[in-house]
Image (cartoon, rainbow, N blue to C red; front, side, top):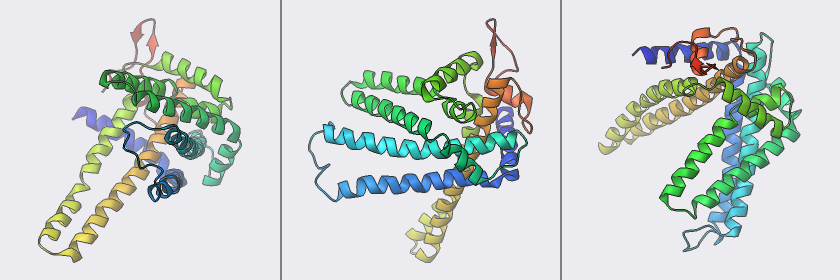
Length: 288
């Protein structure tokens, strides 16, 4: 119970920042809509043609080209709007006034770096996918671990590119250095956010379950609104969760890069997120 309460405290501290700067929530909303449009634009024409109709279980060269382009477009969308969110969150945590347009402007000023990072991310994603199609189960597990390691090493790439204004290659090196020096047992903050929102997500099954019961009894006029309530609840939860995660990750970046805990965050909880190593010892309190 103590772990959940500490996790809930992290969510509340991030939410206070969101409450003071509500326009931060626009970034995941627009990003989600843009990714949905991109997905439909890529795969609806393919579904209506014979392009992907094949009895082969492995992807062809054409499939990989389309997959790479899809990865590139969606990665660009996500990275661009994450860059805007990080920029605004950094300003908010630094006590500066900020708006959604400020975030877009700052992200646009790093367009070249964002395009290059999208290209790198899409290449890594495509290569891992191609390899996973050609290896046995053990190989798939190894590739999954490699993908997780890549995500860890590049954890701080976006804030480094946007805030420190460096290019992707040195940003990867800088991110790895920051993770290596501040990585303790695990990213507690991310697990904390996930545990809290998992519990909140479960509440959405209540109206949808009632809706299914209503449908079984022929009460469709009751069923549809209840299902819509669940879907709307989950969408809202996803938007808030994504925004709070961006805020907290930016706070952790500030702590990892400067050693200072941002205003509005408890030093105890931020230090528990990335327990620093000093001469082989961990300092800070015990992790969750």
